[in-house]
Length: 179
Image 1 (tube, rainbow, N blue to C red):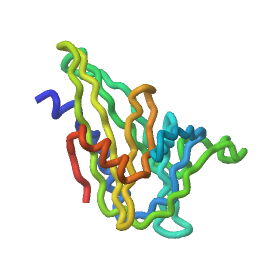
Image 2: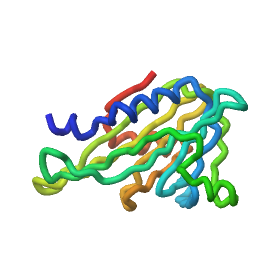
Image 3: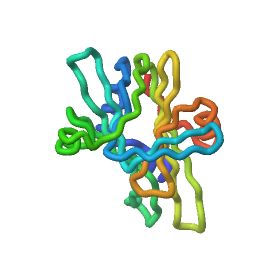
């Protein structure tokens, strides 16, 4: 079925997310974090995020995550998909890092115990399908959501508030759990 084909993450992306399991999240980092507050709900977002991971003080790596429109190979439908890659430098911004021109949200969480990938669709007319996409990270003390920012191609929200995460998940369908 086409829906299943479209929402699947690439095998490489899935493997990189699986690598996060058992690892401690240090922070979310980007070259430009924007903040939006609505009541008690605060969202951090940027075109692309790196999740800073560490297994000990010397070993630090980054999983870079961005989101973009993609075109289905079987029809003219469009959908959101995640681009996921690993790097020793977040977001491939070596010069920005050296000059200190980057932003970070310090998290310092416990180890990642589980990851869930959510995606759903919205069918408008016969040919246009836009998929929402989100990745939820679970530690023993907190949940973190990385969600496609619909208004901005490439944009990713980082949602730290558990009530806001639960509200977002109501309309999404769980596609994959990594434990």
